[in-house]
Length: 189
Image (cartoon, rainbow, N blue to C red; front, side, top):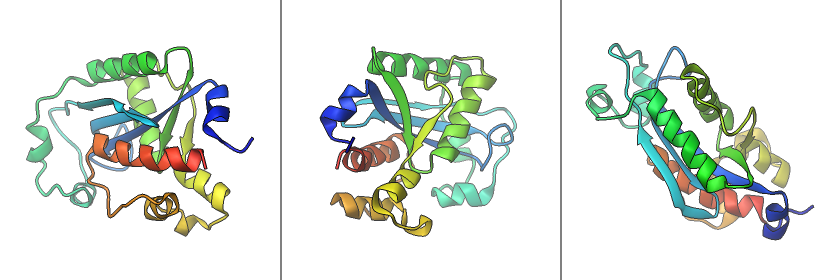
């Protein structure tokens, strides 16, 4: 199978680009404060939510600075649903947009985004519509092009796809949309 759109459709799958913003590198110790997603190839089908943080927020200053946040109050002052409500809404949205197909979690650096999303589904006792796996764009791009790990960057993927790209804005939905546009091309060359 060479991955054309028709062949992807035959696989009975709905690819969903997912991105998260967090206060640090690991779930449980750090928190997810934003979740964004869209259907690959149908970016108008999108989901975005902020997620309420606990009363005491553990965070890494470097992790927040990397996404342009210098003061934790920027994210602690946001109005947001509690994690269980946010994950319940996300699960319902995934079920709705994937309808009778299998939802496939797609992300650039899927291990990072996946572990937060899977942990939040589990921790807040919400069924995970993705099951137990994800498609990592970085690893997929390596297989597609034969490039080494260090060259399997989102910038190189965008260049390969002919898509203008400077940097991620580090807002979950915006990042998910950018990933989706690139994923659509690399999944269907």
